[in-house]
Each structure stands twice: as structure tokens, then as C-alpha cells.
Length: 111
Length: 122
Image (cartoon, rainbow over all chains, first blue to last red; front, side, top):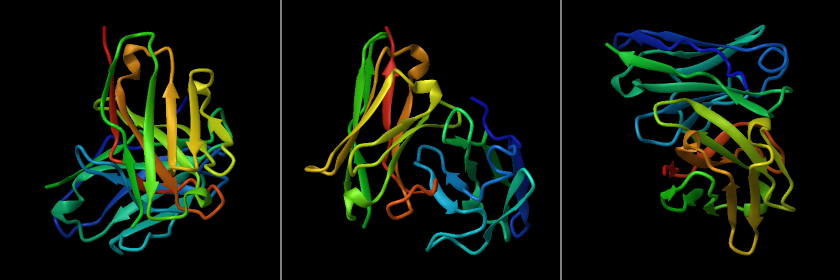
């Protein structure tokens, strides 16, 4: 079962912008807009921050934005804050041997 | 408000089965699909499957086919996930999570249970 590919870690200073990539294939990210992003703090359940590629749930800061190009989706966090330090996972619907697949996860560090 | 409350931690021996409960409240139980996701210690998220609480139809990830069963009890607003033939690599936190799309599957999980740690050890 292959996960979507994310960088293991991304870092930035407070106030900066960072972007996390999520690379899949034509079986998932490339042909479907069911791409979501989750934030997970240590010991906590994940929290939805982006759904359907670029939509923010109510209550999520507008510093979080999502996009997609080809087989790669991206999450951008602008105006980086200390509270943004967490693990981030993308996910997508897939036509392979499972209906949904998560990314490998990215640890975001605020310097 | 939407709440998903899961049953407590479990310790099981290899070869045994575990059944994790997830009780929903704060919304119309039968109108939203529920997913199960697991996370091994220090590892990433893995999607296990989905259940429609209205009618009980399910779909499982191929990795868990034959070992997992998801059921729902509309009288109590609770879904269950049973995993059989446990191995040490099944040690993980198991989460239930609600799909945000009304009566459809949108693959975006907007509310999560607190997680249930299942430890498999001899």
C-alpha cells in the first residue's frame, strides 16, 4: 500500500511562509479533487485544515491555503507561528487497492 | 457539538481479536459516513476503511481485508471496528473519524475520536 510522498521535514522562521508538497499519481491526486490536509500535534488526534484541495473548514486560520498542479498537491502556511509546529499529512481518494490514502507526513519546525 | 468518544486502551496477545467502539453525538448519526484510521507509534496515518452507519455498508483497505469488520448500532449511535488475528505490528492508536460530507463520501475527516491505543504483546 503506497502512501503519497511528502518531505520528511520543513522549517521556517516566525512570519515566513512555507509550502509542503504531496506527490501522488493519476490514480489519486492527479485526477481527483478529494485532497485534504491534516495538522497533528504530539499526542493529539489529527485536525482537518484543508479539504477538496483548497477549501478551509470553518474556524481554520486563513494562513492555511491549498493548491494542486498535476499529481502534486501543496499546503502553504503563511505568517508562520509557533503554534503551527506540528506534523502535517495530506490525503486523497484513490482508485488503487484502497479508497483513501495518506501522505508520509511532514514535520514542520518553527525556528 | 460533534463528538466522537472511543473506548479505552486494550492489551491483547498475538492471535487475539480486539473490538473498538466509537460513540457519536451532536449530529444526525445516520447522515454521515465514518472512517477508521490507525497510527503505529512514531509512524504515519493509515486508512483502514469506511462504514455507512445507515444500513451498515462497508469498504475496507485491501491491507485489512479478511481481518477487519466494521459495524454500526443505530440505536446507540455507535460504530465498532473489530480486528482479528492480531500481530505485534498491529500495535497502534486507532481513530474513528467522521466524513464531513452529508450523505456522501468526500474523504475529508472533520471530527475525530480521541484515539484508542491497542497494544499487541505476548
